[in-house]
Image (cartoon, rainbow, N blue to C red; front, side, top):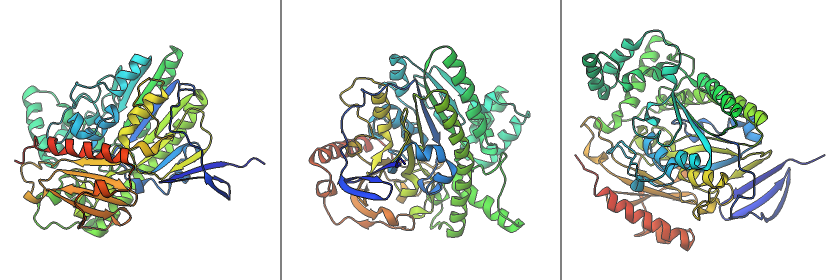
Length: 487
């Protein structure tokens, strides 16, 4: 009987396991190119927006048996930014936020660098975006390079309820109010207000249904395909059903759940003096997101199985773009943070034809999705290397720039942050000082301890090459943050 092969890659230790036997000998794992492999006919990148790592693991084996057994799992992947725009800009460019410049302050992606979709287009791939997230579209410029962009809330049947969403946006989100007024003046819905449908309805199955149709049509035309899908189901307010509903039992609890959701979406911890996140409701919100992730992940697994059956030479990437804060450092939602809840994310990579499970525990950055996809597509560039082959080349760097919450952000939260992970420690630079946190305890910690070192980069266990690279990125961050206004 053949033994199932599982490879476990840990920081500084590479072991090969064969179903119970630990050979305890180094895994011969290359740090070079994968261009000898066949280029995939389809590259599918599926993003569960705002999905925390612990909302998917350890349940993935049950929810996604196909991808679980036929993928490389990155257990220490982190987003370079803390919300959709900067993190996607990094995944689509390979740059850190201080280089691509897409932050809460600028709210746009510059056109000064090539995008993943654009480079794949030059290689012969036809790029399709199917999204339920306004932030990934032309609103911020993240659609640059795609041949097609499908906004699922516009292309799915609706019930003529546009004005309901406009009123809800007016009451719920202060930043939508100007949009609503503009809608009345122009007698048409603005993009933000119309996109509010995704807050009240699950589009997960419709996204994947449309993806099947577009893939089938394009394959019939002989196209190579880059498919990008983004679901809002896993994002606030975490769709546990087809339509939005409160999950608590009893009127009093439903009120508490609703008020907690309001606190989250409005970043109350940034604007209310001495705000304290309620631990009970934070656990409830974790459960709510986990149920939403389960619903979507089951459909993703079916889609992956269908895609691989249709085209065995398909690469499938399933990940999140950032996480969610449910009380880490007393924080809510996903702005202005460098916490584990807000930045540690699932990353599952099934390369064309992969039929075994690999686990990588080395800390890596989502921004290296960019060079890994280019590498897999056979695009020649000396900087292109693959995460599944060379995880030790990745720098787990996280950046956050302060969020202006309608002009009410407290002074102590007007801070820009640079963080990196070294083994089991995270080093955080904010307001001119370094702090340290044990990543295994970040779920409950509310205050960071001082690092006790002048330069943790120099004292880290990273290789000399990685230290130089990290020092360079840190210095560029220091220069960039000088351009960020504090009012």
